[in-house]
Image (cartoon, rainbow, N blue to C red; front, side):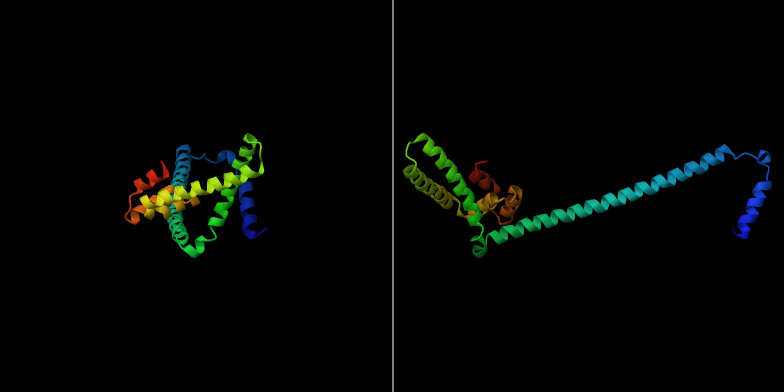
Amino acid sequence: MTLQETMISQELANVDLSKVAALQQKRTLAFVNHFVLTNVQFLNNFMKTCEQKLMDFEKKLEKVNAAMVLLEARLSSIPELNTATPTPVQKPAEVTETTSTEETPASEPQNTVPVQDSKEQETPSESTDTVEGKPSHPEYDRFVKMVQVGVPLQAVKLKLSLEGLDPNILDQILGK
């Protein structure tokens, strides 16, 4: 214990607390209210600042997300990079063909011949749909492909309008 602490403890020991005047309640209440008020104001300002920074960060993230969508769209329009993309897309189509061939043998007694015929029949129908879509609106084909790959529809419509095309025609092509 230091000398000061010793002196203070001796003085407190000598004080008769029954003779000490009580603290004024109004004054104590005013101090407590002031303390609470300043802390609440500080916390409110801190919360407001944090919320504003979070909103700014969210806006920046949305801009980055939109830029990524546009970059993905530009990358998908490059033919050299597109050759790797159709391979995964064709695999699910083969799975669909397999499920349709599984349904075909159930209705027909021969297993081998109808499976080959159904694959041959589905391939021309898919190509005719694509061929029919191209003459009417060939400039929209890459946008349809973007939607099929998984680019959000609103981002594709934004890109359409930036290139001076009508987004409503895309809705008609997609059948919406």
